[in-house]
Image (cartoon, rainbow, N blue to C red; front, side, top):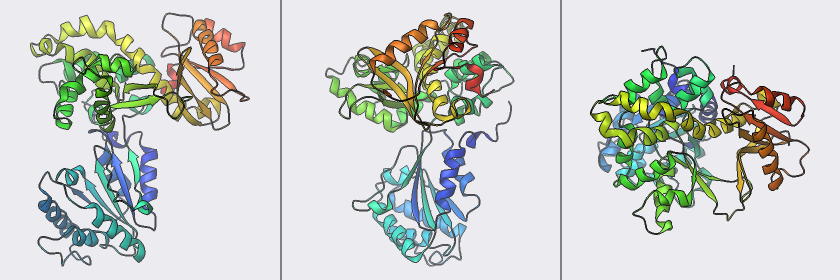
Length: 468
């Protein structure tokens, strides 16, 4: 297997920049870094903090009194001679241990990183008020001391009335396609897009792939063989995060076939009789970073027209193709599942993933072709229109995008896009209103000719998505 030592921080330059800028500030601050397991949170923090005096303390899964003692012991190992550390009691209070931590390097930038900080919450530790007292004291003393809490879920450590010390929040999701492509098996854009639709963008999963072999060889080894390392990974994570995972799994199964509205999600959980009962489950999946709640860009503030999608393509693939066939896979029938279900269903699965890849391109890489960044990017939908990609450029222009269906010449996609644009007020009156059509492969010749006749049409093929 090829080594991927640069993987944990691949595609995270923006997040590293944000974190390093925060650690370089003169004022003491609180930073919360969150993201599902495997997204590279710890590696990100280590990379950003390596040029600063720092301590990385991994909170143990222990009761509250032992949490304080463990942090004190980490301080003694890291800075035994620092003011306040040497004199810590054997069983210090939170006020004592946090004050010692933030005062360990007066006059110089200092980072105290608490990895697995959710363990403090689980132990019901009352650390929040002492933490903010210590940060406030450090600010008054002019100490550039920073606390970084690293957790799978976004933490809310702000006590009431502490709005002046609101934390900087950095959330890590799956890597976007272009960054993940460097670690996926495949020899061209379509192959790499299919691999992304299978394995997604979680660095902890991509690290295990062997780029010297094919997508299907990796798939067999990672998911379809008995005891494969990712064979039960999504279910194991769900069981660890939810006491009753069955309804959560039913929701994810309903969304595994593509983005859906509230009605479709509720229909996927037949033992919930009222539609409102599904709300806390969706909220929890959102908190876990598994599901994204989406609104149309032109929706009003009170609109209930929401859609839901699974964030990581790997999770969608697993609930679509692996969960329904676990019995067969457990009996060693992986090749049968691959040939009967995965191969014929892979391109339709990519079709459900592809709109988000297009939105990634318009959010992160559109400067390459349109000379401006996206001020906002999302989707538009209503009774008479459905535009998967839309937004406003920093130059003031509006863009509207749609994938081109495979096997077509693309012109119908453009005509439908023109029709849908007329049905929405979003972007109305702007000088530039750009149509963007996307294709995983090369664009059809008929569409290329049509675009050449129009100044308002922009085309994006697989090479452009890949950055080639």
